[in-house]
Image 1: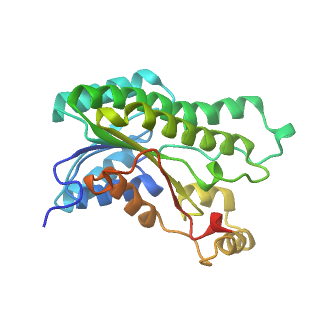
Image 2: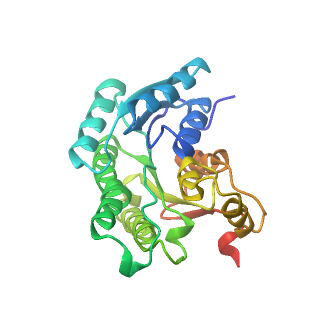
Length: 253
């Protein structure tokens, strides 16, 4: 039985850990030729090697998503090697500081914007240009429940994730008729290194985060990966401009 992404060439940023890693591994199991890209080359190489050991196909690439030229060069290398780019998951991101807006550092705000929002913007430009040239493809952008609802203390992060949804919806309308599908996932509270950094080993904080989702637990990166891979697959052929919430019921209230 063929996998959901059989023989598709799929690029994933932030593939070295967390949701990106889970998506890369699942895409490999579902038959994709995976380009695992991350700012940490060692992490990307480890993920690519794990896919290969499992019988899949993968290569590692280094990318700083805040640099537009890096996206363009990466897509060029992918096409030179594989002949096309069928799917991309623009996943790389950072949480930024936790602080009230008046105390939020301007330089930190710019850094979060450069990575979380402009990183997706630059990636989409390079990826869509190639997909239009080859006759189609699918993009998934990683937003967040922080892009659906607000939360005190994370104004910078929330602004970027709301922005990702705006980019996703507008671009989906612009390119749907030309064979390019563009959607987003909005993960809830997922047990990743990003949240580990927020918790900093405090059991009370960890327990608090678990209670926020009606399911009463953290989400797993693999659960978000299932949504990403489905959206990248032809099974989601009529899904355009959608923000798929994967949050254990957090935003249902």
